[in-house]
Amino acid sequence: MSDFEDSMDVDPPAGDVKFTGDSSKGKRLTAANLPVEAEDSLPWVEKYRPVSLDDVSGHHDILATINKFVDSNRLPHLLLYGPPGTGKTSTILALARRIYGTANMRQMVLELNASDDRGIDVVRAQIKTFASTKQIFASSKPDPNASAAPGSQRTNSIATYKLIILDEADAMTNTAQMALRRIMEKYTSNTRFCVIANYAHKLSPALLSRCTRFRFSPLKEADIRVLVDKVIVEEEVKIMPEATDALVTLSRGDMRRALNVLQACHASSTPLRPKGVDVKDFVVTREMITTETIYNCIAAPPPDAVKEILNTLLTTTDVTSCLNTINALKASRGLALADMITALSEEIVKVEVSPKVMITWLTGLADIEHRVASGSGETVQTGALVGVIRSGCELMG
Ligand SMILES: Nc1ncnc2c1ncn2[C@@H]1O[C@H](COP(=O)(O)OP(=O)(O)OP(=O)(O)O)[C@@H](O)[C@H]1O
Ligand SMILES: [Mg+2]
Image 1 (cartoon, rainbow, N blue to C red):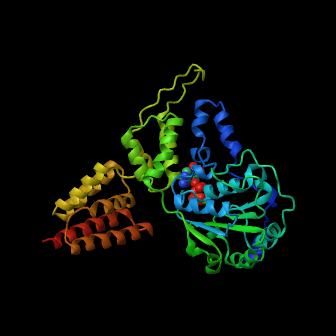
Image 2 (cartoon, rainbow, N blue to C red; image 1 turned 30 degrees about the vertical axis):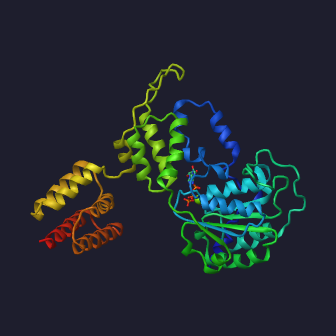
């Protein structure tokens, strides 16, 4: 059945594959003398996408290992997996640039992602054709744009193998993954595969066993801060130090999220140019980004609201009045129950109670979260939240 679907549209040949991390992009963007409004609308995630492997924050062990593989010309098939926004795609594009240089990337790399059709037809036709053809003339001139790591020995010839990047491979059909297995083995002499996915368990076990696996864990706060601080300086973002702390913590290891939120807050802190005023005459005075702005942008309940809610839940013995107060708080602060539960679950573990009470609270919260996620009504589930916390408190006697 999938064969039939796949034959509907076939991707253009490899030559047309575009690389999002093209190094010319950085130049184009920084050189662009755009009006204030247009500059604000450029996505920073693309503007600050790492160009070389050295630019990738965190994941030091993984990067060191991959660098060693390339230096000794022993690159295995790779599998990079982990949560979104941790740098998988960026790492592999930087690696391709490191191996081949920007100029040679087009001939040597085939990048397919979820936006391309990667059904069985493409595996049979496009991937197989690309993998089975050999590079006859290896370039002998080093690419000036190639970002060879310091200490790298091989700078005077590009690798003889080609690279096939299968981004978002967990979305590939089962049949296509099956067909890949033999292709991977057969053409190992001149092709390396790099499979990228969010969930390793969605890939076929046979495919997994053919690759060297690297898990990209959520980035540490310090790693996120490195890039966030750089962007703040380069884009002249007016932000309070506490707000930066909140941003780094709330992005929960997702660099993409951190940059997107920062850009959104920066844009909202920039005043609009009044009609009739020329760009040159318009002096931009931005507002300071505060912790509150960050919380509003991420739509996370502010810490004082969470404290107030928790306090009410723990101290109000009368369940009905407790529920009324919570509902009033929810309405006045404009909070969603799902966000409240996430924030509460982080705070509630800090309360010192007996294990029995804590277990009641945690399992209760987990159940409510599940029900809310599967579409239960807010009103009833808010009641359940009050019920769970109060029944825990009743256990305390
Ligand atoms: N480790 C990192 N170092 C520097 N920038 C990063 C890092 N991780 C993510 N970024 C930033 O986030 C953006 C998105 O990263 P990338 O596309 O590599 O994520 P991903 O891991 O492939 O996510 P997804 O699973 O959603 O595809 C990049 O353009 C870059 O600006
Ligand atoms: Mg990606």
